[in-house]
Length: 475
Image (tube, rainbow, N blue to C red; front, side, top):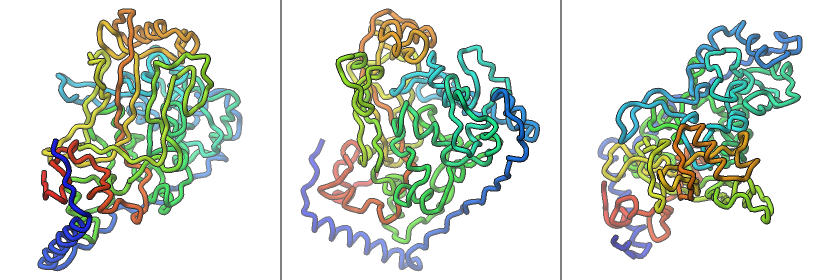
């Protein structure tokens, strides 16, 4: 690897000015600098019918609420039951490096946070938009078990409990009377708290976005956007892609859905868009106010001599690191990922990427993208060299037994994996592309954030011989 050049900063500045002057002169010969195109999307006003008069008597079950909803919305459950929010599986898709096609989702994948939903239904299904998913006998064809309230109640008092059922004491009548279009809080109740706590998984999603300032997110805080204004929905199928549970960008959301070319007046900025994602400049830091988890060591769990601390150590979960106002890690990303699947063999001496981003400097469909990378130590089978998804919250699981061998054996049975009875610990990494918490334009990255002696970019890791502005490197 060649060392970076040590040019003085004034050379960089002069060079940047000359490059910019050339760009402006070239633009002038074509009739002047480009005028930014207007956004192609205007935030709609969401009609909100007062449902209070339609519900007058208490409900004896959550299923009774759903049946009442379906009287006026007869196709709603039929549509919803075809979506990943119900099935926890995506559409059939090809997986890089694999033969055949797969349906992937939270139901059959692992992550490096709580590891797996299999066998942990009592806890994980609190974020399933249904009632009573206790085990494999759950009937996905029963419309009565669709939970309309979790996405549509606006009272702010409805809470999900074990297996996705309403928590004890939930006022179903008050929740039903309040229903309307989903607010940010409806989405955030699961997405802001994924992984078992505030901001744990997503470095760009937390409760700030329920009522954000302009600095927290310019679209939501200044323009009043709701989640559903970007994640547009048809027949209850919500657009957007979570690369934690998918491999491609089908049905995805992009900045260019609304912002048309050219987005900037400055041609130098527009020229960057061939290789740099919008998010790279406009999400310069993540977890700006509330901390996010960056490391989780499950192997340290079970130590009764250590004091519990939600941001450092929990006996049931192990040791953590959190951070806030963090600089992202950067990688080429063509909006597809590789995928670790249950049963894949690993090299326990190296880091296993659960969903490593695909793309490289020579890939014209890839751009440099900002990521939160979460690193974790997970259990693996020493004989079969496979990551093992333990039962934690379920009956006999680790959180009650503090017996890893038993928890892993139960998880292996629930997941259909062989288990030798001998386990160890292996390092993993999981990549979370950042797209939320977009900063105001005046907080966007400046030239010297990426170029020059204080660059945040690891140009060698990105495939360059050095800083492109010094060497004139192109991909």
